[in-house]
Image (cartoon, rainbow, N blue to C red; front, side, top):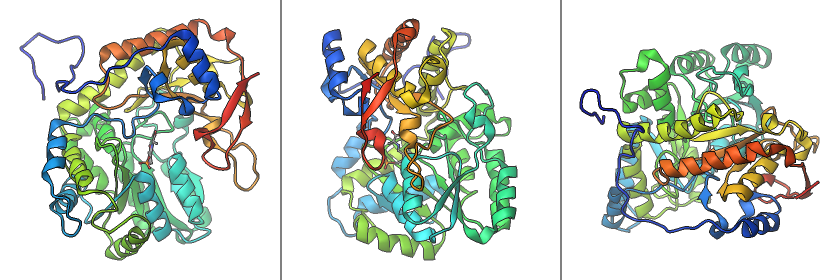
Length: 465
Ligand code: F0G
């Protein structure tokens, strides 16, 4: 851990790295930005990257890799069968995550696909803590019935409950009593719940949920995509683990489950890759067979050796205290700046992003007129900053009724890429948000003019009303 002399404390927890490669970029003019967002149908996903100044669309695949990652990528040999990179990757996954059997995949959703197909029988329930878009999609494609049993606090942006990602044990016990354990394929627990505002799960409650599931022989699967950030927040907020290392907390957390899927494009600090880990050899065999059909060989997942090598190094780097603390504290700095100015945000601050509460920000725009989509577009127009709608558009339509699913949360996510931006960039973002906030009454709602059949938030188009 970085320590300074006695009573010297720098203003920010500094970035624990030096910048060796840079990518120049410039803010386009106000007129160019107005044209760009109109051409993109008021959907920031459809902006061209050259039109963006600070890109907070996603923390996925956007991390800056380290010199050690690049060096290892060049060092490993590119032979498919029995490659050293594959062995290194599997060993590192076992060491950091603790699962016995490991499969690499292209991305997180590929791991979700294999696992959902291998574990869900049509008509079975899959219990989740809120939802992630692709996770739910794969559960439903496998014939599963999606169920969300997250704690109620997760739906209240103002609640400062420290672990808004937890599953509610009472809801779980009641659900099992009502439907029977055999009708539940598994309980899927996401770390650092993305759609709830990057809110962590606690180790204490996860142990309780795991004990309930073990008693009823229901498997527990983690979506451990942001497990390092969650471990840091456990260390900060759960007194019993304040003295544990990030590595120890991750292992203890994963020990409560039977497997995990991971999008390595987030905490694992790579630009492409996913991980599937399980303990049951039979389940591994089924997943490996599906991997061979959909991804590539079970030892490569269709990735190049260099991608496996980058993941192996990233798995270690994500557990470094200096790194993960500076990462999460940078997010908290942006959160504090906008919160202190009175902007409605999801509280408390989460791990990977700051979530603006668009419903409270734009109370004059009803949810059917897409306030979060409107706010994301306005932030781009004002400051060249790209964020993402996480509300009624992302929630999509109910496949059985065809109606908007509705969403209790109507948010704009400002997602901070890892090791890419500095504190001065965070200040630009905060200033942009405050500017939109000052002029918020001027904004009107949107009308959706194009809607694709699934995952509509990627390509839907809008017009101002
Ligand atoms: N699980 C979680 C919690 C995620 O946030 C994501 C991706 C996935 C699974 C899917 O992984 O993209 O590698 O296939 N989230 C990105 C985001 C897209 O911007 O939040 P993937």
